[in-house]
Amino acid sequence: PIRKSPGDLEGILPLAAFGKEALDLTLRGVTDGTADVDPSPDYLQSSCVPVMLRAGIGSDGDDVPPSIRVTRRGAAPLGGGTVEFHCPIVKELRPMEMAEFGRVKRVRGNAVSCR
Image 1: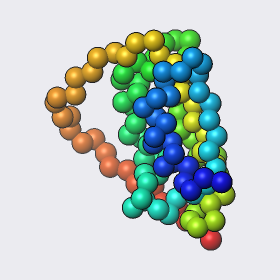
Image 2: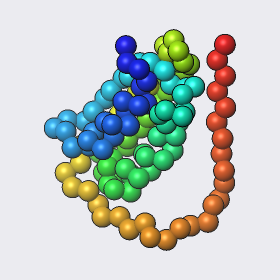
Image 3: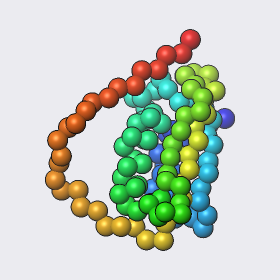
Image 4: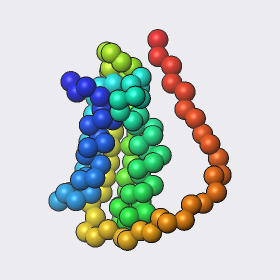
């Protein structure tokens, strides 16, 4: 078993779109409870996936957009959580310019409890 599924996912994200085939990955381990070490899969879904879409990954009409989905939560130290990651391939990235900041429209939080 892996130490923490989102931690491994963070290393895979930059390379996932450049394979020969779309990547479907299931990671098992700790999904919540160690935010000081690795980002949660919820954070990666809300921060990295929109950037991937802006870069043109999964924006074709044929492709399913990239997604990170927690199918089962698992807290430290035992784990038992499952994270599913899907990323389509891309031939060429779209250029992005993110020099201007927009207004903050909303702030959201996510609370997870395990017994």
